[in-house]
Image (cartoon, rainbow, N blue to C red; front, side):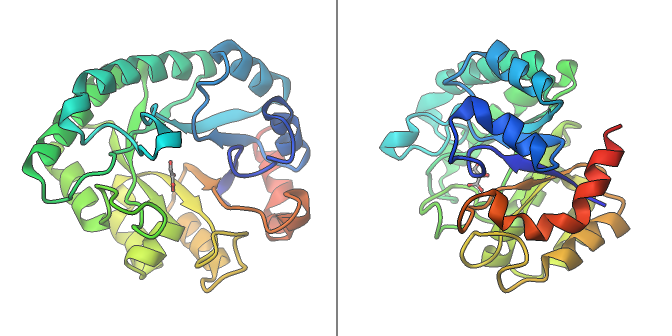
Length: 264
Ligand SMILES: O=C(O)C(=O)CO
């Protein structure tokens, strides 16, 4: 049974940030994700995790100026120094919170732009080299252009080719079932083919990015496939609740007791 991680930047946002941890734990989650923890001291985040007996499954490297529309730095040649500094900052948070997965957002750039391709490879090599000795994996995630127009990494094929070509032991694929269905479909065959590269999975319904099981896909069948394939990582719940977060957790009920038992 997959271990689910509530993304606290999407779920339980009815509450202030610090109260979301206890709410996730009370709902039965034993792990969480956060898009960007940087508005809070690493020690504060670590304290909230410990108080609620939660693991932090994943967070993102700083994305640049998110409010101004930036969506990552890794593929932006002019931002290489900032990207490198952002890796060090994120690794400080990872150590404080014992997180072993960091998602490196690529940024907005044309996929065929040679300078962007080269900057992306250099950035990922740097991040993996810094993260490896700390036991941290660096994740790259294909993101659909409807949610993120102009995003550089908008193809599962290119992501897989890059990971295979770079041969870095801690460079892994973030397979978001929601983005996969929009970009490519064929979710279960995709999980089967890409499983050796996958370091993290996320889920939301398609097309509305809401609770699993409420859209066009049989998400429970995808979760069963993850079990069948021996996936040991987390499934991040990165969806917008259709009402109060707790009220939309019916999909989670069949998995809840096992999350709690597994963490004992
Ligand atoms: O938008 C997404 O899917 C992300 O995971 C951003 O980090």
